[in-house]
Length: 371
Image 1 (cartoon, rainbow, N blue to C red):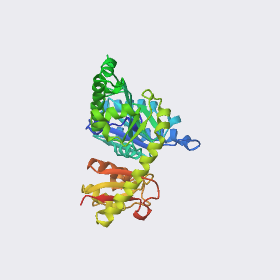
Image 2 (cartoon, rainbow, N blue to C red):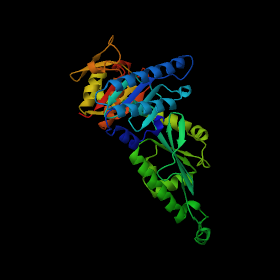
Image 3 (tube, rainbow, N blue to C red):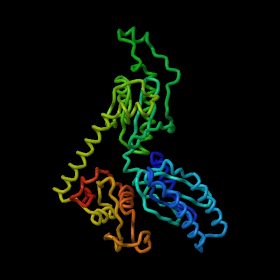
């Protein structure tokens, strides 16, 4: 699975307690040759390390060890390293397994716990800036989930939606002296209200920027009959795209998406400048980490590829240069940025990834404080 499948419900389920030991494996992968030649060897070594840890764990019963080995072997068999992204996450318990491919590098690690390690998934999801696309017509509406340049139709939560038994009252329009209009017909408006209601439920469960695409009359009517569609960050006035395909939708949306990205960059820059003038600003990993853990952060801005290994002691971070990777027990965090992102989101902060070198003056990360 990839991060566009990581809904709020999926994340909640992944974080739910499991019988010990629940196993999480993470490792960096490579998209291209020749670097990806090493991935298969690293995965085999990581699996061997996981099996050694399981066999040596006194809290794991013999049957649990057998079942875990089977689930891990099945999970690894599902991994397709020919189509890798930048990181691989494997979860396994005695009766389930999942494989996630991430567009963000992750450290190599084996973790046995009573929950799965989710911080790398959360950070990768946030970095991809997921969005929704609603394509609407008088009698059909489709919803598409996107992340970067990947766009897939959302076939859940009532979508795609089609009007049933619509009989546009042309004669009524003619009797009142108007032109026949599909979009003023009450049956059509009722259909669009149901679309707006379904859209509102999706946005409530998984808040993302929304782009609307359709004929001017369709977009206008949808926004008139409800409230959810009014949250759209941009509209593209072109019909005939309720069935996509994804590449055409992306092509039509490209100018609106570029404009939105520019506005977002300006918004973040303005927010950081305002926070500095109000002395409600934090910069650098240790300072931002402390504020995040205390729940004082309103927005975190972090450079896209910023990752750093740090040592955590007494609630503060210090460089861990030269420490042996994997020294979790000694407080070494190889994925401290991902951990910070997950913690910030859990505490209700907004997390925004910005282009590399945008925050060089602030050690690659900065925050707007609530107080």
